[in-house]
Length: 200
Image (tube, one colour):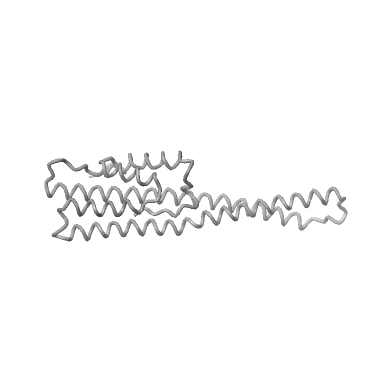
């Protein structure tokens, strides 16, 4: 049976919990959270790759311009022409320097990407261990402890809000919309560059 993409959701706990329902509901919530975290990581990674492509193209263009300048005969240039040429080379070099800095920032995402996916893997492994533990799998407190551990690793407000929405029973699609809204609108956090992001 085909399901709509990102339609999986966490199941909020009822007041009169039954053991089986509690276990299934908590597992669904953790799976939904993992899907949401993987999606946000892939989205952020794609943006970094796009940034790298743009900066590399700009560097290539600037490098070609410098090569063109050096291959030209400037022996007969006037003082004014020489000054203009020097100013152009300085402008191009400044642009290349800025593009290199932007590339370094984009490259740093790889470390965060590895870290974030490692946290997803570790979290799912913890869920597996909890489900395999006969003495803990039906205990609401054990699931809450695991979820609190995961939440405590978040460094971005957008991630904490997304976590709360998944735990409240919203779908992955709804949680991703919340994440992107806070990601795009925040003026206080630099989500795509310098933050050491930890998801799980």
